[in-house]
Image 1 (cartoon, one colour):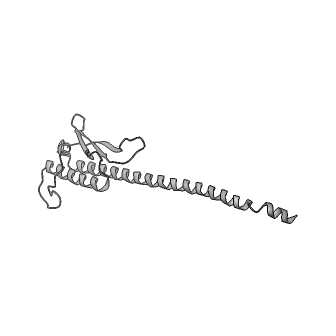
Image 2 (cartoon, helix red, strand yellow; image 1 turned 45 degrees about the vertical axis):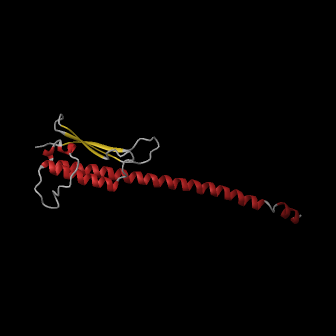
Image 3 (cartoon, one colour; image 1 turned 180 degrees about the horizontal axis):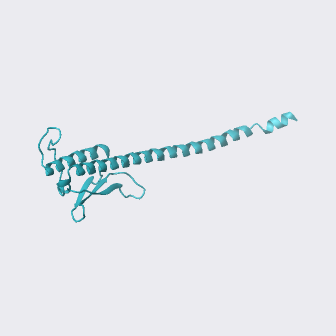
Length: 160
């Protein structure tokens, strides 16, 4: 009687092992998918952090040079050595130098736009009281909806 039970259960453990392997492989594929998703979310989080930091940086630079007005919006960015060489720069030169440094930081910390469009932008609105600046940072990142991410704030600055 023991022999017949042993003969009937010989292949049963092999089937169990195969089923366990299939279940484990599906679970491992799920874990790998979650890992890839978490890596993408971490990268997105890091890029958004850099964008917020860059916008905060230029907002502080604008607050430190409040009489520049539209010079920040018109500035193409130029290395005027206003800080490092102790040069005596006017407000427009300082604004151009700030934009130059800001654009260099944006290129260092954020992926450039694939279409070559401007990554950082400052718009000046003199019609509001106090005058305000709209600061926008864009970067290239694959998104599910195809809309490129950007971060934008409006900063009122009293020119004294």
